[in-house]
Length: 595
Image 1 (tube, one colour):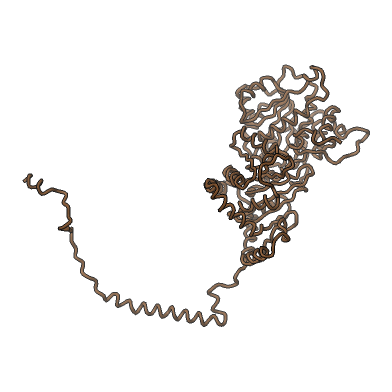
Image 2 (image 1 turned 180 degrees about the vertical axis):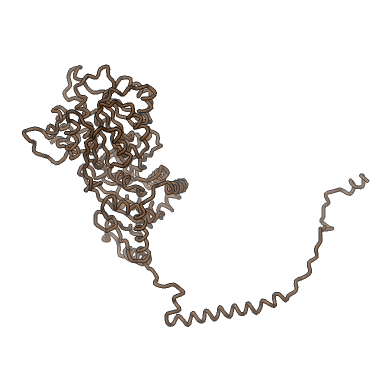
């Protein structure tokens, strides 16, 4: 068996592994059964891909058929879509002489990190094994990476050399196409990776302009996790009679994913985050270089949240890396490399990194701010529980965010509020929240006063985000309102989350927690005005009413005498001059001289 440490790093990054072993038919390898060439099948086997995944089994015969057909593939994140289009792309271009011609394949993806990941995976997979002569080495495919945030001079030079395969983001690629008047009629294959994300990020105008410049004889391969209306409209215009391959239609998340939801107050989120990192994930503080160190990704809504949480966790002793959309490309690359190398245990990101980040497979994902869209939630948790590995997603939910949780329940077809083991809504013990919240607002705020400034900026950013985020469905608001009403009336009680076992709680702490829980759950059955209807309290209420009546009568009796007192006469004068301390603005001598 091949040592896993000898495999390329991009294999873990794309999160795609083989399906369970199958017995070859007629002595042929599983890849060759799907039409993959022997040399490419050998390259896949050497890199640990011994058996195709379901999406690869369904799409490869169609994309490798003769004549070539357009393919629309739909499968959840981490199912093997990257190799599903890299294999036919490499096999179609392998062995063909492109001297004097332009680019023959184009791969469009939404993010720079995903483009770099595809570039490294494809270039390694397309490299021939056992090359000895210059002719064999020269036969390697020429690749070009065109992404934003990099210098354009090198990208101009790369396109001038007429590469065989271009991996690009739509914005920068269209810019260079217009500036260089680049002819795209030589393209044979065009791939749209993470198509739903392309349209979510607003690349619709660029994609349609690129589509207008493409030749009609091309083969188009479009892969996506979901199929929103914008992608469906683009498919009608960009693909010709495509073959629809749709897997996991009833399962949008991995069955190996364990989801947990914590109902918290907005003011308790910081303490809840530290509790999860310390008590559940047990991520150690201090810088570590060990590759086996436990790591986690924290998703939040704005870059202001990223900056605040980064400062908070660094003050708490956690090695933290951070990424957001407006961060410079060089800084993003440095932060990502430190996290991938194990130097950082926590990565704080916005939704720009929800899909396509060039990072190893994570075991834990934390949603500091609950996603306003069910698809965004799927994209976030798609970074874990990939390729048959177990993963966990920990989400903080406030009462205002319960409608989005109801929408997620409908979207996934699971009841996260039902109290099942894998999808459980629970509370974090109060004593843990109180300890961590006091630690944040007392110790850390005194250590770095700038932390409170970042907190205020984060709150203003949160207000703007709430105003601009999409609304949940009306049914979700009704369900959340009814759920909150049952909580207020004491009909429902949210128990402590099972991730916090009661065995680890001391007698005094447990008694205090039960007392606080009972006080919080107490709901009086009557008001103060209803007390008079109960036995002995009526006498006290009558005495109180008599006392108030006597006080009112005494005030009314004194009122006429107040009006009878004659007020002193007021002398109205136009001006007043103190003879001892008055200073005139004119001089008597000056008045005498004028006279």
